[in-house]
Length: 219
Ligand code: DX5
Ligand code: ZN
Image (cartoon, rainbow, N blue to C red; front, top):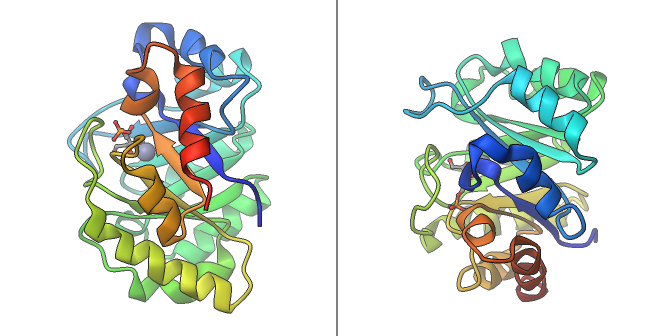
């Protein structure tokens, strides 16, 4: 299996100094998690293509872009064309996830599907062979700093069971409330990629926080 991936979320960083936030974890993070919110799919607004493009020129870390936007088919391929490593869009916003995943792969990125708090996993299990990443929200999407919801790990278990049964190399990623006291249970449920905002950028030493999370995520 691929090694554990830790993805600090810059949502918890200082938006006036995003390049510094990226550089602070360059030696320790696997991916930089970039939350794109449009104030429609979620009631919050962050950054879009121009800022992500500029930030990508400022750091070599592979980007894990999490699109919390309506009509992702309109925007997602442009992120792939920027050279983003993984582009994840939400199931709730997309009529044809398999088609969009195909478009993303054709545009040169990995393709991820995100499942929000209130969305069941079962209708999406058959789609796993078409995806590189399944992002299981462990909060309701929209804001950082929320409390981890352990009951949502049932979805991770279901996805891991299916992925293992079919010998898929898909990444199963968790996002929301991941910290030193929650990451081990997410790993135990079968997650192998972990987003952490507050737990990394709220720490005095973000790089050390990443290393600590990785050590706690070993299954
Ligand atoms: C929220 C975002 C998360 C957020 C997580 O919708 O998708 O990536 O940054 O923040 P924490 O780690 O603080 O829960
Ligand atoms: Zn996110």
